Length: 285
Length: 351
Image (cartoon, rainbow over all chains, first blue to last red; front, side):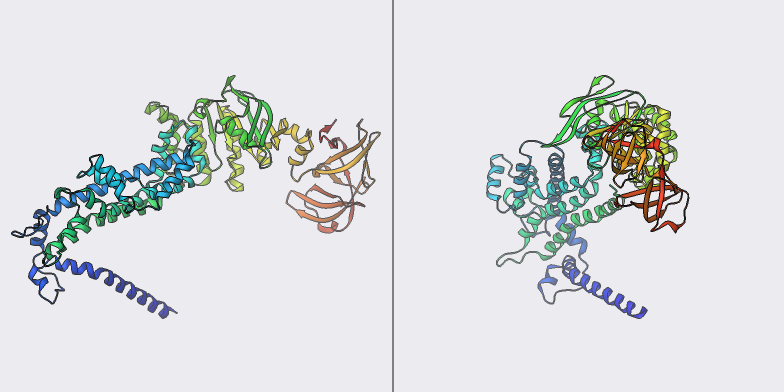
């Protein structure tokens, strides 16, 4: 019995290791590509072990957008990272605030048209950005939001998914909690701030992670709304670096940029995960 | 301390009327227990007093001030909920002080008031804990602490002990009683548990289907129930109800047995006999066939049938008795001063 258990244990361990290798392999190739020279990449075979040019490649990408003498017509990757992070944070925080408030209104207030509004918002779940991108662009352009952070962030803030999620969570909070707060004399906004938000913090953390990655990975909308290079996000930047036609591109730079682009989401996921798990353990309604 | 007057209260949800023309008064410092089966409207009534439910008709006065349209907070009442409704993310201290914080009371006064309440409730060492680290009884005490710190005009309890286990319930019941006598705060307490009602109440209100059946001290309600419903609802095991015929001071049961009693009532009536007022007496007027015996410690319950017409009767005799009675016919006598008679149609008490 014991032996059987042991072999099962090693087998599943082996399976998981293979899975990790499978997922990790492309990332490893990209990392290797970011530490060698252009020539190493263009001459087969493709290197499998990292080369000595790590700092060189990363610093030229990060601060110049490419090596000396290689004109990419691009801004530095650092600037792109900053743009992307601002956009992702703006979208995330905006979405969370808006959806918390709207879910609060839907669950705790009886106003005329409540159901209608809820269903209208719910319907937008079925309309991805791509479908409404032309009218949204028109509106954003008329408002003079092209090439601005506001333009990057604002149209993406409304979120049916997050509103729905918070609504469902608020519905699970016992009604006595609201009543206790009313008897304690809390105004609706005090209830929202002192009770509702603190007990939703695990949901907020989970949503923060998901929405940050979503915001960071936005491609189509930033591509439309920004025309000047200094507003470029990193996802767009990578796309522009990839050569088309007869062009060679500069692969070490491209790989370095790709590695750097992963960094903010990875940091957010790892740091929020701790908070998120801790919150889950402590939650008690 | 305050007195509460309820005048002609009515409440309906859509077309269903849940409270019918309900009036009663609560004196200063009194503990009134509202008791009734589930769905009788007792919780709704409490929530109307708290200001959590709208009043459709009638008025509620707290200290002679009409409070129908006031927010719960403005009525200066405190409520203890069945599931405690503690704020899970706050410590015990923060839970108890939240209302005071909203009232913008200075910090050192909040501190001293919470300390005082914690002392009364023996919560002193738990003030920094989170509700999730407390036991059920402790949470209940925190919920009461939250009510006490505000020095409210009245306490409202909504089945506060229902979530506790039997032993703890008895203990907390005593604590609530002690607390209420100590603080002398007017209280309205809702429960479906008649033992809680009997032990806690200064006066109790028995409700059924949105109407008041009986208001009185626990002893009055027990010994002289005004209606058939009250008679059957209060007391465990429940009172036996048998149809009978009254004739010249005699009660004739449907099987022909007769009991002597001083009543002027003539004709048919419902006879109420409490199980504990029977005693075994071979020459007794009531002959019962015993089907089943339950030994519950202090008492023995006999589940019997009236001889000849098989109406079920439950009898409770003090002490532990042997099983020798099962299947036999036994004579019982009944304490005639404890006979209850109810009119057939109105179900009101006769004499």
